[in-house]
Image 1 (cartoon, helix red, strand yellow):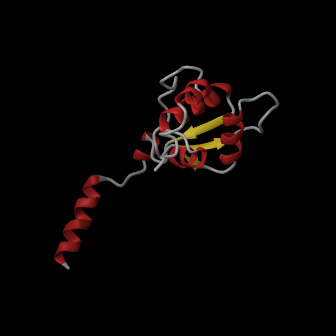
Image 2 (cartoon, rainbow, N blue to C red):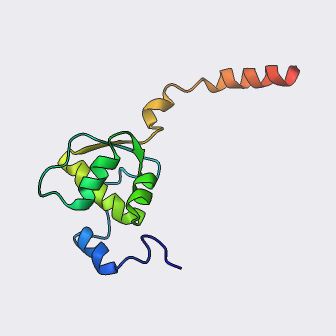
Length: 118
């Protein structure tokens, strides 16, 4: 039985990442949403082109890896390249900014007490 991405030729993955084993950016985890900001251009690496086409709408990193049939670590390296080039934007579905919009913990405690009294 073969496993997509894991049983690929290691030489190919080495070439795709240009020998890198880690992404330059730490912006990508499994649920980070990625959106293309430009169209592919002539001379781009084929994997970069595929990512830009996949990400025309917000797409999670894990979905990109599944579509490309590549390991997450390789996809993160490719996404980091595109982010550095300004070809994509990335955002985590729940950032620290959204924490400001969470209800007050005191209010949540009052609701809980009210529900218990029902």
